[in-house]
Image (cartoon, rainbow, N blue to C red; front, side, top):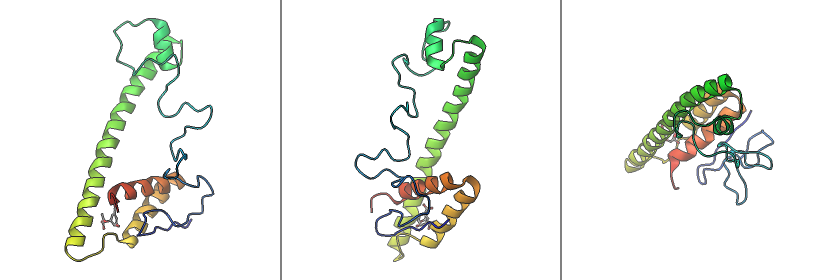
Length: 156
Ligand SMILES: C=C(O[C@@H]1C=C(C(=O)O)C=C[C@H]1O)C(=O)O
């Protein structure tokens, strides 16, 4: 695995994963990392029977509604899914907060360094981070780290 970064554009110069060609979705018409291809519902169910997030409806909602929301007509399975989704939502909120905190900290480092006459970016440090994510998470980790680094750069 070789992954390189380019200081001027923030776009990876090369990587040895053949697809996706534009992992951070900067090309017009390119859906990027988030799957929105044909036949794919995407990260949030948006089918005709989906009327909103679990927990938003009244207690004792009608079984057809619960089935549509959870994707199963089996009550026990639906209850388990609702419980799991609560934890998923909690995790997502935490991830979003951490993402925003990291981006702000990274931008502060850049501003501080440039104000002191330093460089905006330090590519050796970015490579360390890319390698950390790759070794823990594999190829997806590399893509995730690229997105994290991009978020921290802000507008170049
Ligand atoms: C935050 C820093 O500045 C930049 C942003 C980085 C990041 O988001 O992790 C890493 C290296 C630098 O290009 C840093 O040097 O630590």
